[in-house]
Image 1 (cartoon, rainbow, N blue to C red):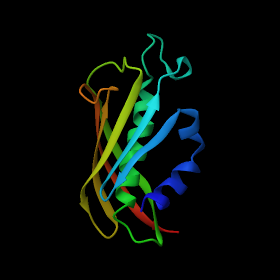
Image 2 (cartoon, rainbow, N blue to C red; image 1 turned 135 degrees about the horizontal axis):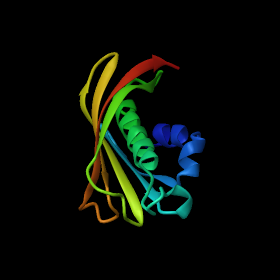
Image 3 (cartoon, rainbow, N blue to C red; image 1 turned 90 degrees about the horizontal axis):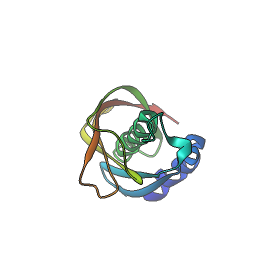
Image 4 (cartoon, helix red, strand yellow; image 1 turned 120 degrees about the vertical axis):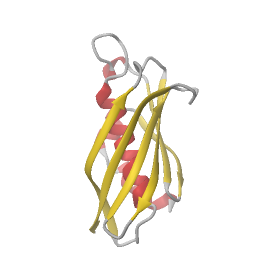
Length: 133
């Protein structure tokens, strides 16, 4: 399962741009981190919201993929994200979790934490769709 997710993750150019790393893969849960860089900031010097959104979207998508047969891929259908506090940290940690996996649609929750995984920065609810390879 890890190899399947890692192979797909490594194909994403955006994840390279965001200094993102695949931290862990378990059935129904994926963790991705992003190291701080000034290139990833907004005007106040915090991580840009787009960074947090992108890595937690990928974490949710890959969590959904862990529940799907090998001949399927995943795409985001929709998501909503709430930003709880500014992302002032040296690393973002995004965790995607499957709430309900169906044949076609999978509902996920995602969380973005600071580097200590103690301060919740944002929360996502997402719907993923299974598509044939």
